[in-house]
Length: 266
Image (tube, rainbow, N blue to C red; front, side):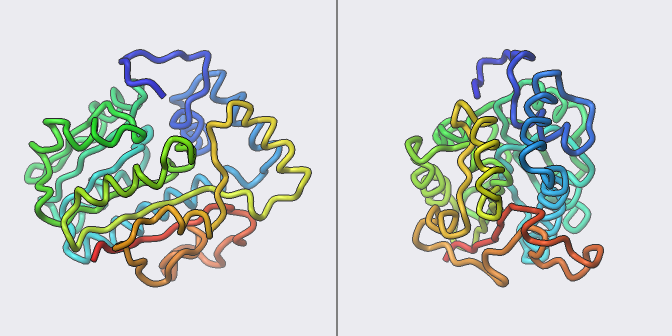
């Protein structure tokens, strides 16, 4: 997870692997091999990726309807239909979005493909979630967002790549502390809580470097600092969060294996 401006196509990267699961073409052999190994142990992983993406859209729409017109999207991923600025600007054309990722391939695609509407704005930061100061102190953040006003902070399918020994709690707290009251956090976290012992053994083998942290729902809630209050329906499967208008029937929680919530800063 370097921000050196270089990428190694022989090493799988989460954003490119996620792109592969979503059916995209912006990935390499290492990403596909890694993705296939995980899918062999967790056959619902592609469904999880799709449902997580739909959660993003619903969460951004919800926040825009609450009057949020600024978004900080960390762990952007390779562009796909329903990008944050597209959803937000469909409701509030002047919405402003800062995208953050640490894969140069992601950022090159983002700059080329994720263009703001004429009265809004987008910016793209090459930075790492594990170093929140590099995000908060970036001049392009200050040039795009006004942190004295509420912001929608999006940590979608990214916090599970921050280990506890890398201070996942502290990372979220530092970002939250920088936001004005009335801001929101939307966060999702993949989990192995529904997997069999045999599947977990295979998933552990595919996670040899320990980069992925499979927290359960209780552990995800434990990452939230004081002063963040989940909005209804609280922590649920991403497939069930405010999904009344989503295609029915909704997939089983066990088949999606990803939890999510939206919380408001008091």
